[in-house]
Length: 378
Ligand code: SOE
Image 1 (cartoon, rainbow, N blue to C red):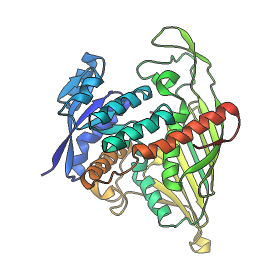
Image 2 (cartoon, rainbow, N blue to C red):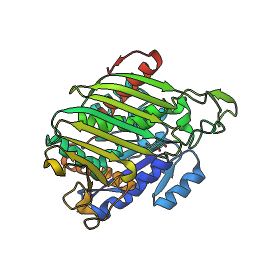
Image 3 (tube, protein in one colour):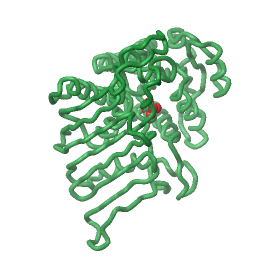
Image 4 (cartoon, protein in one colour):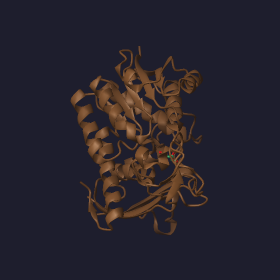
């Protein structure tokens, strides 16, 4: 008999929807020892949060997250708020013995992140950060191929995350939906929001990062602030590019911007090894491009592997071979891994500690972007 884990979610924006959908779907497809129960959702606007709760099937609502984290009937707190609240909610949740699922990036900076790690470790509570792209079957499969040594020595890691939604100078900063443009709420711009995904995947696939040299730019210097109504300085990075050296000696090249006209959410990575290369593209997320130098000479070429077969990661739980899944399923897999971690007592990453490594790289990137010098990852 499967045991309940009562979820209390804080925030109900885009991520609140992806997580709620995943909690609802997971046990239709995956058998687990524990199952999530949508116990409560919390946000300041009582009317809107009630509407959200009714739509997704949450049993109750709260308007103060401090009350939520103290509730005895809640087992796990899911943090879907702007980044500046992650630290306080996580610390309070850990103090109340709750498991925690926190949206990315872990924190505003590595200092805060370290305190969050210490809090969950001291409390001994299961924790994860929603770097969901790890859970796309093709990306998980790439991890398997690398861990099996099929690429041999890795020389290069290249990643991009390109969007175009902030090009208009009329777009305000701050407030619901636009908090990502407000440095006080987001901490940083594309570095924490988009490159953090690329860095998390890169560390997972290719190991730690030693040092970085970065270039950042804020193209629109002032925007009206939704909350104050005044035109205020923009404190986030609109674009960022950096080079890095990995612990394994390979070289990294990363770029992210919200000013790449025509690109909505183009996350791509490519890894070049001694024996083989791998490419992945979020817009074609069920495919892994594979080139092996071990193939017979005249037949050598890029293969496009449709990662939809029963022996591909997670896929035996879905439809039949050849039929693909999408973006939202990465969150379902994340919940599945989380539940498996609870059952087995060995958390499946990314944990807070894993996410802290990404945070440290983000901090080093932002530091280098400001100074123009190489920056060591602390
Ligand atoms: C920003 O537009 C955003 O929604 C990020 O916040 C998400 O983490 C990313 O997956 C998609 O883009």
